[in-house]
Length: 276
Image (tube, rainbow, N blue to C red; front, side, top):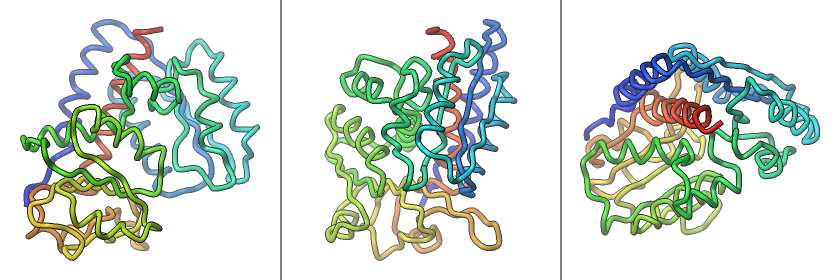
């Protein structure tokens, strides 16, 4: 098994972005809305703040209580939509079940939607009419490219309970002529579909869910899962010790998808500032 070093790739990208921001005197403001106390969301927000500070992007955090309703979140977004010092807005996902994720994302000005999740931006991305791809798509594409493996004729399985994540990922692969599908843990056939995968992308939020019994030989695994255990150790959805003799490539947690997603977020911040 070879580990895909997302940290090293991310550092290369952020180094290039830092030079671009300072050489072109770009003024960039990123606003992050964090709702509640989800440990993974808090961790990612902290990492995004640190990354912004490193490259010269102004970071603005808006923390809202767990019982915040849709209207209050949308009101905050409306304020940020009008703020000339804010070029980029994101709502840290996942949201609590009492909140309408689709409605909230739709409230963001598409020209400030740094995650690339707004329906207008997704539609443009899937039609190939914009370079502003969802940050997760960009990060995963870069990690897969780093393996040097040809994905033609390979089956790509996306295992996640989030359609907002899965659908753009799946369609992005399909648009490139690749065989991609997604499944949920509550689907009876999920295990069978996972076992067929040549490339497995996992994001379910269950530590060590995927073991050697769930995969075929030579599979490439992209582990998006971020789970904080009782001893505060952060692990993925894949049991890396179990799969190490069976898979060909694996993204580590931490140090895989996380750093790349943040690097691509910074890249989208720069694009939005230039398009202002």
